[in-house]
Length: 492
Ligand SMILES: *Cc1c(COP(=O)(O)O)cnc(C)c1O
Image 1 (cartoon, rainbow, N blue to C red):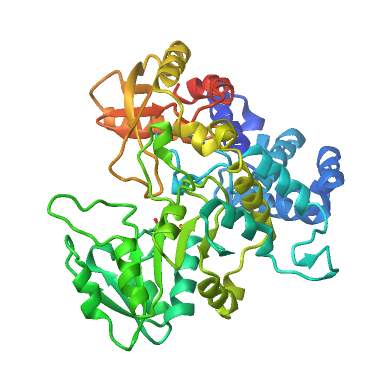
Image 2: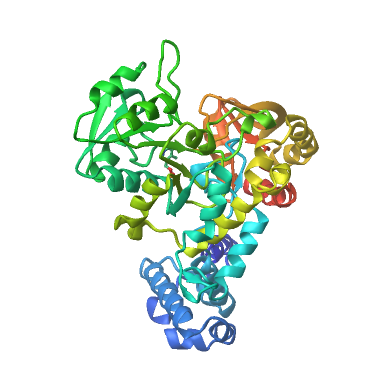
């Protein structure tokens, strides 16, 4: 894409040296036609590779832009040499065919980063997806009977084994799981929720709005910091359909607080013949504390406490694809599965394959910190990250010198995706600081810009006049290191 501009600059230098004919701007009528451009040997080779449709469209666009420059008297003759035209075509095709969805390196220090695609899939999940997507499969076909099957059965047994629930179903994401649960169990009736749990998850997922979309009436009880069992008891009327708990995953209410746990709510609800649902959000399937990570409630604990429905995400702490998992009693799950909205929110075969393979990893919990990328990254020892930072420092420092200085430092990372918002992960990395105070802000922007524009974009975070690269999520440093010469170039 830059070729025409480069030759433009070269032309001005040329004109200073007095190379007359090559420097004169060309007129629009000297541009080749689309057909002639396509017949030019190198461009014809591009047509053989990519087909006529795409190459002709790019040729037209290129000639249009050259024509505007010619009309403005800004088109140097060099831009029309066969080499320059061919190079411009190669660049245009490359830009057009470059996917918008790109791999990046997450050096933000937030492991499950919603903006960077959340959980990474395990190798076995990637392989299962590839194998299942490449041909027909038994998504809704019962191989035993030869009759129609239900896609839920792909993961239902696994989910029941892992959570202790009687039944399970899956939808597109957890927001859909919550919406569907409320709609199926409480449409046209009332749902009781504590004021301390009316969460906004981000991306316009707010509990009161979800309630309204599901066609249920929200009945708030208690206060922001304290809710008591009597609050729930008093709010129950003959319009009540559901008592609901929401895990406050992205904030913490601290100090003078009191909440009623699921066990107590279940006793109150079941005494009146009502179900209890709890939205866990992140939904770590097993106890994270066994690896020294902050404890998160598990679906199994909630089922044991008497919840009729538990909803959680597939791509947060669980470490799988985007998914909304709904586990609970046979009765409640049956109603949810039969509700028409389920069909609109159902999971596609692609994440379903990834989910099945991910859940299977949990059958071998001893291997999880190796096999599941999310846990592998979360449990990475600070000492290992510190050692990596030391190892990479000299080359990084050389690449950013002399405009920036580099040093290693300890950092506080985050789990991310609203999980455990107050907890920090002791981590380490490299801080890059502008060498001169003057224009430091601009220099820092330029640096993070240069990192983001590498072929494999590197995303760090800026804090106090430094660009921080947290290395917790850099498992293989090679792709990062190989780009340092390009970074050095961009900074010159
Ligand atoms: C993240 C979250 C959701 C939404 O889950 P998605 O899978 O992102 O749709 C809902 N509730 C809670 C408590 C959450 O933390």
